[in-house]
Length: 142
Image (cartoon, rainbow, N blue to C red; front, side, top):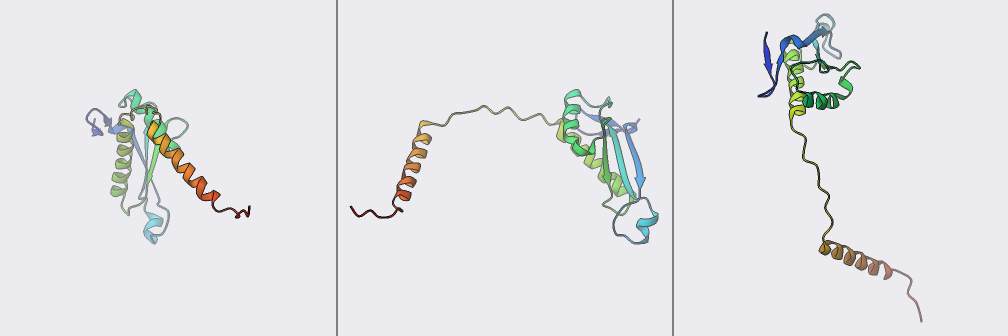
């Protein structure tokens, strides 16, 4: 049983990660047509015993379009030419996503009211602007 460290308190069992290899798309000559270097990393977020409940919920929200209906996170890496570098890239992206989900949520914003001084300054500015616009009108010959 090999553990992959994510944070101080979270470690993933390597058996929870499932890798599939496929051919990369895009340019690359003959190599891209015959070698399966792209990696599709699958991690079952919904049923993972390694994740605390709060982290799991936030990870399900952060997953977005990368999540399947069953709660499996799918990360595809095909940026590099070798399988090993694509594997490392996919794993690092998964760990970064879990670390982001493990961060505590920001504190709730406490609504504040504008101060009396800011209200007065705002109204003074509006009055000055109104006077400027009033001065642009057609002159009256009374």
